[in-house]
Amino acid sequence: MRDDSLQGRPTTSGGFPLGRTLRPRSKVLPEHARGHNRALVLQTLYGLGSQSRADVARVTGLTRVTVSDLVAELIDEGLVIELGQRTGVRPGKPATLLDINRGGFQIVGIDLSDNRVFRGAMLDLDGKILSRAEIALENSTGAEATAKAVALAELLITQATATVIGIGVGSPGIVDLEGVVLSAPNLGWENERLRAKLSASCGLPVVVSNDANVAVFAEHSFGEAKSDIMLIRIGHGLGSGILLGGRLLFGSRFAAGEIGHVVFGSGGDECVCGKRGCLETWLAVPRIEARLATASTEAERAGFLWEAGERLGAALAPVVGALNLAEVVLSGPRHLLEGPLFNATLETLHRRTMSDFDSSLTVRMTTLGEDIVMRGAAVLVLSRELGVS
Image (cartoon, rainbow, N blue to C red; front, side, top):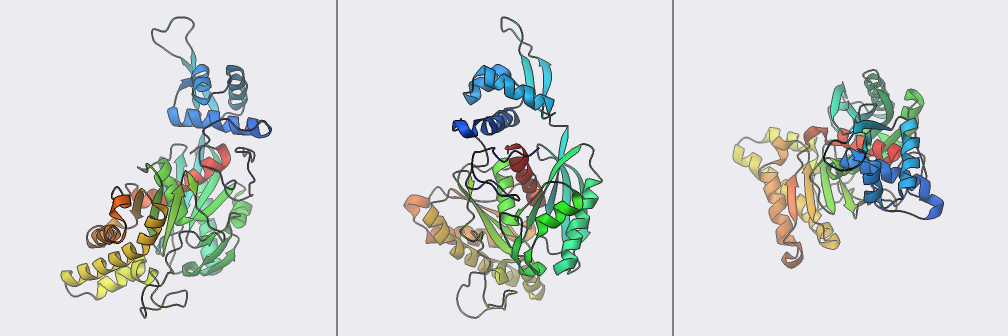
């Protein structure tokens, strides 16, 4: 199913082809043409729905002969289906409409970012959740946490009602392009070969990425993202995913967006990483809940949430200013983030960035709720296996 030449760029065995956008948009060099153009046809059908061969040729700029050859190949593989003839008043023989075989394939999406449960779902190609499963984390770390992630994947596969094309996983921590979790302190993982272990156990293609990066993919494909975006994921820890020009920003050591262990000011609570005053000690869900549990009044609760939001806004302002981002999206428990924390983040961001250049900055909550990482995990698989999103 996988075609590593989809975009004509170097690839890794466990992640995205390096340096490419999520969606193909145009023709490419001859030596990479077939794989790229195949993905271009699939993306056109995936994004637009039912189209004739002539429609696809017009949208993609490919010749009708090329489109016909590619469509024949995709139909043989079961990836594209014919829907019947177009009805209407056009003269001549009615065109036959095509679409992605949306009901023929399913995807496993797994979210490991919650501090209480590992959560997963079976999804269709449009990101709709068909069934769910979860396994209580119960403070598991190390090999025990890995075993629970594998068990969850195996459980979800038993729920499939169509061919499963792959497993996508959003994990906390720093994850390289081979699906190795280089560091996830909250789960006790160091150089954990999560992709390889899941693939060996389940016998399916697996893609693993940082949970914030996965969430920003969901916002890009199924949410309301309109331009360059930074998504802040607040869960077991704190991180962010950044999309610029349709490309994910990885960084030289795969740690782009890892703002959770940036220290603001002096002192502060001890972090799981060993430092004091990390942003995560203010904004990780377990830390917020622990602080709120000690508050005796609503005013005290609101005051803590406001201060946490101020710290988040102060941390984001230099990034927003340097990259001139159009959108900042917060993802996490709404009952904790909405209200004082969100308002303080918004006010601090606008106060600390240049109004002439950042006045159009949008700061909002995601509309995808707690399913955002699972749905983003489906985008990982769609992009990797079919070249669409």
